[in-house]
Length: 199
Image 1 (cartoon, rainbow, N blue to C red):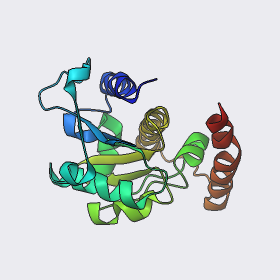
Image 2: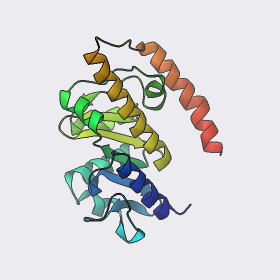
Image 3: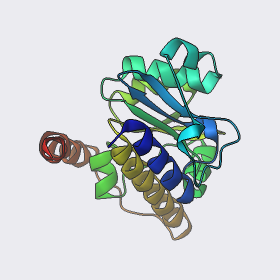
Image 4: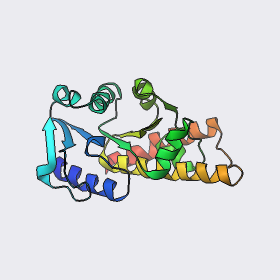
């Protein structure tokens, strides 16, 4: 599928699912540069004309968030798609300033053992080992090698945040141990993600 059409399709899906709430919060790195959305576009049903394509240097000057995206593209090997997710539960956990515990198997596999919370300055370093990072006052940065995986990361992150909030109000939840979560992540990266790459 053409990268521009794929970008439009996933931008609309991410907006309809509540993960994408601002045109500046999604970017895709391609061989020709970076794709982003134009100001004022309808996020739920964007058109090809709503895409802006520019090189990394131009894109980094658009906003501080764009500059952060460029830093992540440059320093995180498999980051080709980035989203600042501002879905309800994700934003609530990010606002707490606390890390997200590993309560779900799929969170351990797709994202890694827990999701740390911090500032923009530490985001790139964390995203080298995990696929998500919580930023207080903003939401969560999600990074993946493609838009399909990015949508999965955002969905699993929201599910994990919902589980943590529910666990807090219901008296706690059982965390997956750090070693077990690392093992799940290792198996996922070595087996399942390679099988998906072959398809």
